Length: 236
Image 1 (cartoon, one colour):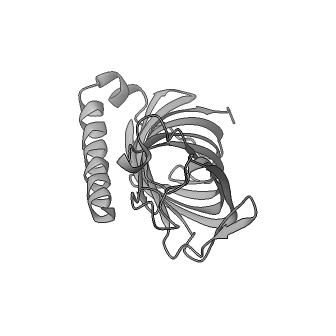
Image 2 (cartoon, rainbow, N blue to C red):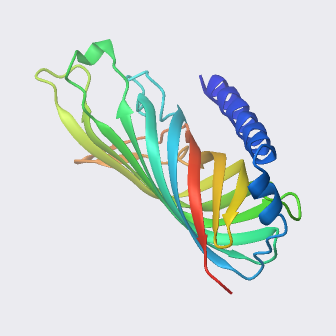
């Protein structure tokens, strides 16, 4: 399943890059007016909304395993505060919140599982725009930080009546990387399409909840947000 998710997200990344470049080529106003926009020395804020695909322990549907969380696709909200060191080089901070709903598993029965998995991240990132100028510019991005995960109202298989428990896993490293395209739409505004892979370093960690510890998990949690965002660039 992890290989399938990774292949899917690689294909989505290629589609985003190609689509962004085609869009820019078909839009003369973007390609002309903002071709030479230089943002060196500018700070910016970016709200980001992402359709998010889980993988690894986060998506594993084998409820008998302590690492499994049987999540389906969710949503991510991310805020970035960045600075253009040069017109091609960006450094910044990001905060992110992701929420995932459960897959329907027959063992729990209809309407039994209304659990949530919520993940908060905070860290820094480096972003590089791969061409020096233009209305639309492809980029890659890498980041690192820490995360906290919560499993809320998880049903316990084999209990009758069904018991529900909450678990937490926190203060562990998180790493990310992604690709995308950025388009200038005004002197102080740009928009982005991107896809990222986020790895939560949970292999040696354990879920902690209500007097019990589950773990170590021996498997990492992964997810892939596909983001659309807009950036406001502060004047120099």
